[in-house]
Image 1 (cartoon, rainbow, N blue to C red):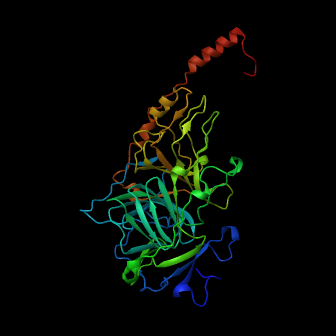
Image 2: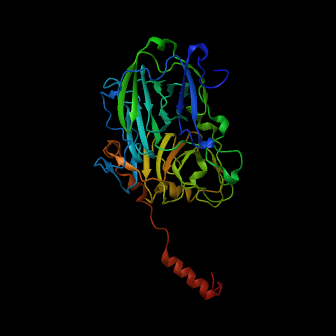
Image 3: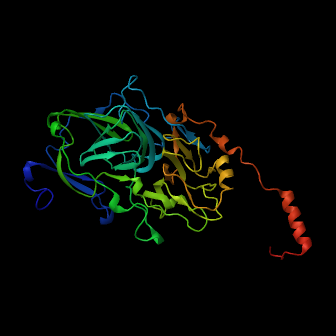
Length: 438
């Protein structure tokens, strides 16, 4: 790093100084994000970009065009785990294996979000990817990832997450034979920690548990040609360069990728009565201009004790002004044991009713008040948004869609017996044991 300033006439070791800005120059200091990178060769040294050869039409970044490939439905949606392609059939890396499930708004006007799923059986090797459309929050579900970035390397395993901000170049290498997971992309703003309010100064996701990479450069990449893939407004472009983009020797700033282990989340819960709202499990949020309302929240449902007395402990039945996309990393989800599987997902749209299935309701309604641990091996999450998600053709035509999802609630029968209640009221009235206001 330079001893003084950011871009001296000559940088130490004859490196190039390059700034990457994650916010406008004049953004308030509390939200201003930028980093300085000191690299062997600048990013601008590449051949012209051209539309990519394998144009991945399943990646969507514009949900405002009213195209026929987008669907809005009030129906509750669920998908079984997405199949990971066989390497014998096709070699599929992170970029080629990414497809959009739903979203709203558009990247071109920097508003809204998108949810993607990735399935891969191949590392990216000498291919690099940069997303000009927004920030990625990646949730691996099967198979760990070794992610090379301009800022250094991150090892991200299932049960961990990482955030790769707009414009940062990275490559995803598989630590195992396969990789599958979920991506929340925000076209506006950045993820931040939620305010804690009366909780105080500590709890939920603590700042010290987020990790940023240490500067690292690809020694053999000095003479290795790379293909740089650039996503802009959902379209993919490719340029070649004769060296690795991972040639940064040092960096400083506050615009950098990071990872977080969900085991470090410190959950809060009701210790008296009632089931708390799921917002109490928020890890990261991207706030909108409306106070307390998110462009998108990332919420986790970790292992924890349930101790509320005289309380229906699973999630309550709900209609929400927000929309909820859920995924399961491993184990069972307390409200839907069986049909909601690791690697699968569900979507409950704005004001579409949802809640525990029949079996869960009947079981939980008859449980004792004894403290109960929901399971050491469970880890579910939710992407919650204020926007109306529009579903893509890839999601609606997926062979693993659960078209019988609605049936999990069909068995919820009426327990209220009007005749019995009327008889009880009549008996109480005859015995004179009630007041007018009862």
